[in-house]
Image (cartoon, rainbow, N blue to C red; front, side, top):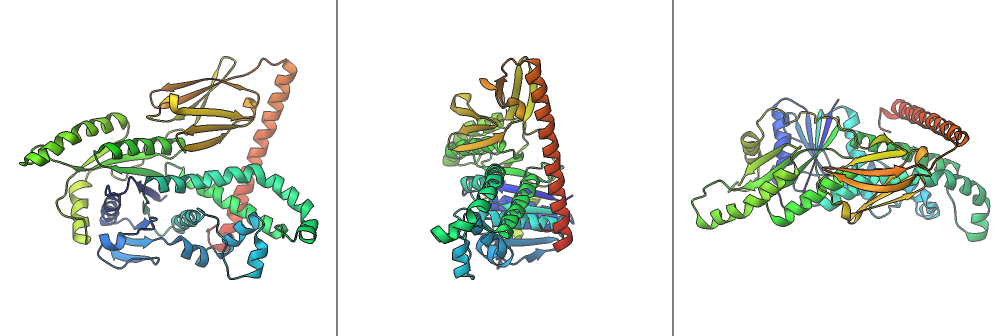
Length: 432
């Protein structure tokens, strides 16, 4: 089984250099490695002092680099998906008029970068794929996209499919609007299957983990803490933190010694926040990291220690615990202030809002009529207490039967996904 390691952090903290050093260290051990950049302001070519772009390029034994261009990927590797997205909102009439055009909703270009990374992983060519992501905010938008789209598909697509079948005959005659046809709806279902499998891949801690890069400065420390919190909110596992540009104990310079004192409380703060996550300190390098020799030097001096690519301990994303007359849902949310968390329940959906980010979690049917009784912040865990109304034995039997049928439907859904995956694997070599 291969690995995907994602590097992210505030702009200018050195995440690209660290990702490149990891890639060189991985390749130096004989592991076939690919270093991928999803940041539109690509700089892998500058780091290795070579030409880089949308085509894979070998820079040393066992190491290739690639700068992703989502528009190019969309047009050359997923030409049908853009049309599917257009059909999803009924814009296929525009595409029929201009068959060479590609319809793309704003923000959807990130989807093609993720699909490309998954395709590269499934190819089996590389044992490790190291991803140099854009700065924090864009990375979070990228990583939450599969779950967000999957939720909309599961909630609205079944209803939409029925409405399209009913309204399609009259929509073109009366309103001159072409709704998706039966084939288009099947293609949209296939897109949903891709998103489900993509989400499972990115949130599997045995395959994909995230590494945070930061420097000991006030704004960067605060953003790193929020980043860690949001990544946990969406179910991604952070397995290491790199503190870059650490000044030595005695610089021999009064000005630099002053900055050393400024760094000290922020280093202590980061170590208190990431008490359960390994932290690597990286000294301040007087020279810029550019060219293979400087990247190899960074790799030799900083990353040569045991366990650099070890898998982190496995953890549960969400945990349900039975309590008297209810349930407790526990969600890892390190560093969060429960006073800043807003939680609302809509039948079988739970909305958790933290600052500008929102996650919607589907709930089991047994909690359909439950009320949120309390929120408890315990160390790095948010606990949501659900209280159930007292039920008669007849209602309890009905609830158990409904839950049983729901589980049967979920099992059927898993079987359908497996069939889709097998079908696509046989059709085009494993790239669904």
